[in-house]
Image (cartoon, rainbow, N blue to C red; front, side, top):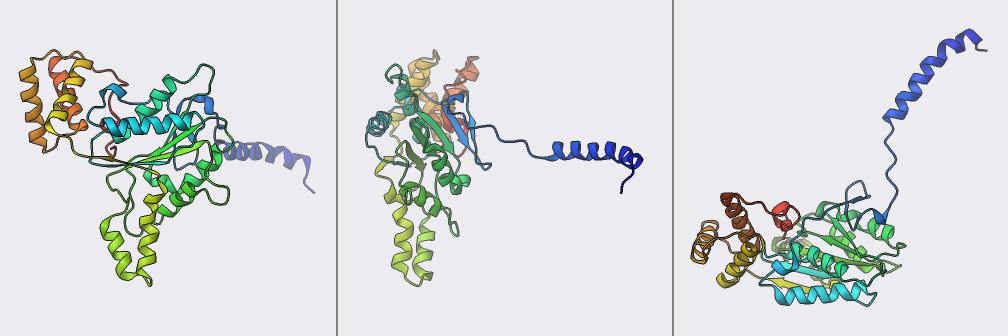
Length: 305
């Protein structure tokens, strides 16, 4: 039996141990609060982190992609109204505004939603966390908001099996995909898989046809495919003029044209991203600042479309 004196000696030690264990224990994750923001990040810790201000480009500055813009906005608006809508795959050339269009569509629909209605929420999930997508769907299912989930620069390489999680999430398993969740993805690949990955499956599988079909069928889960192609010189110059007007960059038209074409030539590319990079350089030389929240996501995130 422990004597009172021994207990008096042990108590301070036990209290210090208890305090150390409390400090070492991980903090409880914050409770899910969909009202914390209109946009969130879903990360490897499998919780939603609010994004107070989304880096996005204004819809009016997205030039040269009119058909894709109108189609995606219409699809997103139907979803926001509770009508049937399709998951969408935005694929094609880099820097042509794929991810910028997704975020601009979210802002556009929220800006014109009926008074008193719930705002649509936006969630970005990174390619590396796609295996956690089914968990995200389960978390969002009971919430009354409409949720637009998107993954930027989505593609899969050899020995990558996380595409199966995406197929499960899009199909919804036995419960079906949540009616309040829509999934958008951007990619440089129309079929999301590298060509050598498909060829390897064809050459090594016991049943090559079935193995290739399983992987290629992933794109079929997207009911809406929107292609983005490299812009023409006229479209590139239209982007330049739109940005220059938006930010009040007073430069003679001939000078603006010549300098922007030289900029594109030195980079071997004409795209929305190239156009905005030129505008950033031009604004810096003129001593002008650009609105902090107006930059396209492609300039903030190197993997962006």
